[in-house]
Length: 320
Ligand SMILES: [Zn+2]
Ligand SMILES: [Zn+2]
Image (cartoon, rainbow, N blue to C red; front, side, top):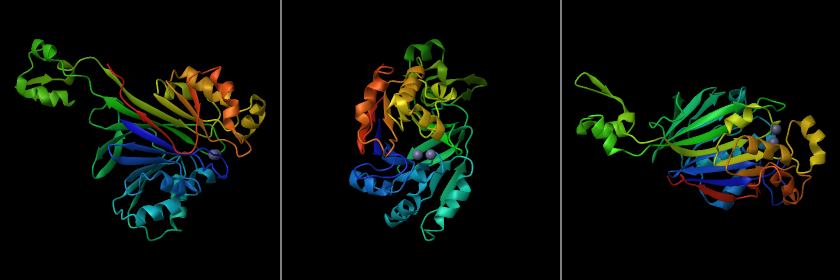
């Protein structure tokens, strides 16, 4: 099971009762933070999920409303007693920016490992010690606890979207193992996804496993126009978190000019991507009550919800 908390739902600047857009993901007791504007750590403090177990920070782009909270947060994580490295992932140019921001907090007691513009997939292994990130090639790799993918978006500076996929291992199928004449001593290894060479013969996991089962998919698309590549990237997400800077259809021109979206466009992406649920966030500070515009999205994609600060959700594997 994966838990998420929307730490904030604002764009541009934090306002009373609405922090800047940021997401905290909790999985197997460890955490990933996505985006960190001014005030993100205040919302985290209210949420009480803790600071020390944040292993990965994903940044969508370098605009202040997504990044200016980082020096303060790194300092707070340091004060929480963390000494293990943290991985920061971001788009082109992120390394220079992180190095600049770190000048404000020169004494943090842990290493920051930066992955700039990871074009391929990143496999993540989770243990009680933390999360370890490395390049991988396959989304359904059972050696990884989850896989991070990124997508280049269309904003006024380099910006990337993220998806997180937790693969679900197929069930062990004893009839298949027997009919494929797989020696019993190999069952466990094959079940864990390993290919085994035994007495000169190669045995593959599919010889003992049942049908593929869908894992958990979460996608996060901020600060962009709705480009064609998004619907494929978010396809079949259990939860699609998307920016909707403006609720009113009449703000379309403003959205085009500022490289953002209106609610209707976010809903159109959710519909095309065949996701289970759309959660809209990143509201313009000029929009006091985003809920007033929910129908603009719902008439295109019914299962739309409007984000609010510290909204919490759990996503589980579907019964099969
Ligand atoms: Zn923004
Ligand atoms: Zn932006």
